[in-house]
Length: 455
Ligand SMILES: [Fe+2]
Image 1: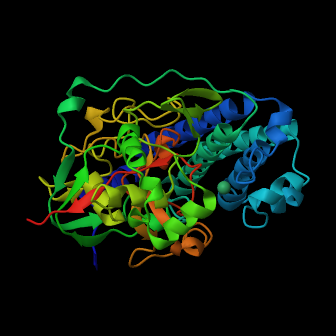
Image 2: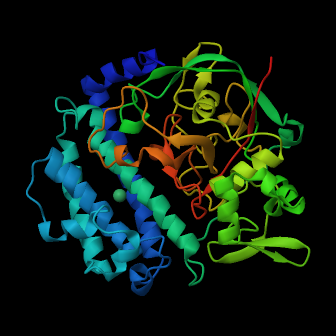
Image 3: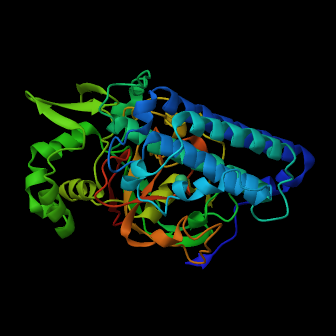
């Protein structure tokens, strides 16, 4: 791997950001991202009563009211204090909302702000932040350069919105969220090839120019990826049920040693939230029970299950570099783009993001978001497990704090890519890296498979 320069269009964007017109556009984009995130936070916290907000729905998750005040506390820390130089508003509550001081299981026992006070705190911080944003110049200190800290906070809130959506899925106190179903898959879905070829050769992985990219996405560097085939779409429930029907959960041949040990200990027999009824499968989804839709990407499977399915299918999980090449590399220009479809921002036509729906769209949806190879739904719908451990790129520098990524690097975590229906567009791009333990199933994760092309 060798260091590599950023792509030309984003260098141009950097120059634009410092011009007056660009600065106003950036200010508007940041304000819009913060407002969108807050609308979602309110939707997720106003749809249940106070008792539900302070209850711990699962030891895996915080009470929703913790997320709400933590969002506000981080916003105050980074923007009002860090960028604005203001005095702390309530220094005594900082330790309560420090994610590293208290594990999630402990948080309900803390003297947390009650719901009305948490809402008032979040509202007050946001008002002051919007004032600060009005006069921000976006140049000078690295934290404000090109609006980074504001962008980071909008991403942070959207990440917690996804966390709160996971809590909603774990709730057992009845449905609180509603949404329409995504449209049926487009007619050409049935004629799509099962896999697409990604050409071999070097490509630029990671970024040095994406303004709100987090430290683990940096820097841009060249990686050689041999030719490989990748599933055109994520693996569907129907395909996953074939693995189940073929005894996939009972056959140690398909599982890694650690995966088989976990499968036995945890008693895994199907994706999380599934149960058998009669000859078919039902699933629980945000408080309703429904038949498992065959055409939808499979969801709520661990890395171990994804890996076993891939082995059963005679394939493997894509390496992280393979996934990113499939999602970003344009063979015509030889350049890595921001998204599979190009450099333009996600839209409702390109990807299932931002909790527009409460489920993935059927496999084969979003032709407007396809990659040059023809692969669909790389962005949105389901997080996709890759075969790779979460490791730093060559030249990694922890920023703006070690606890964002550096403390998680190692072989304990597997990388997920692409974002789910529950991720806000601001927190999802071709370079964005997510990570989790290989046993995790409550996250909105599925996968697709790959094989090396011997050509
Ligand atoms: Fe956080």
